[in-house]
Image (spheres, rainbow, N blue to C red):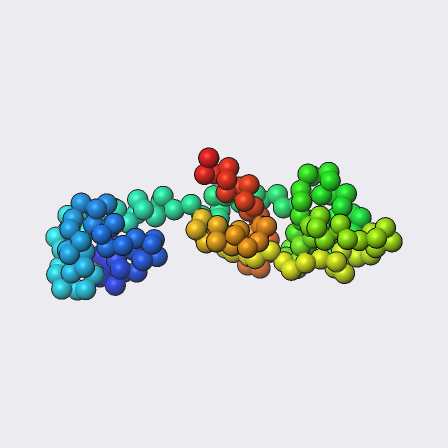
Length: 179
């Protein structure tokens, strides 16, 4: 078993978004002790180190990640499909927007707002001529905070793994998880 270094402890704490005081409270030690351990000024007893590591592990298990929230069944359209196909799919699925995916890679999005301004002759044109920018992409490890920040500006977030789309998250998914 390899014991974590002071730098390892500090890095893990900051990755979890914990302050020294929050970690100290969770580990039932003092904040100055956490500061001294992270600074390398003191070697903690094994029992103290174990409490700190256990507190970090518990905090890590409490973090909600994209993998916990995502829908693996991504309803999408291809950029070369006609706009009418996107409209039909949105109506059938009761969605207000769809991801545009080509060969597993998100290349754009199309929404009811994009379709509202089209004339009837535009309905046969390819989606790529009327699509908007792609939804942002994150990995399965992205945290709920990261995803929530993106959802403040976008209607959805795509989850990719090795460049391939593996899921999607919308505000409804986040709201369902929080409730």
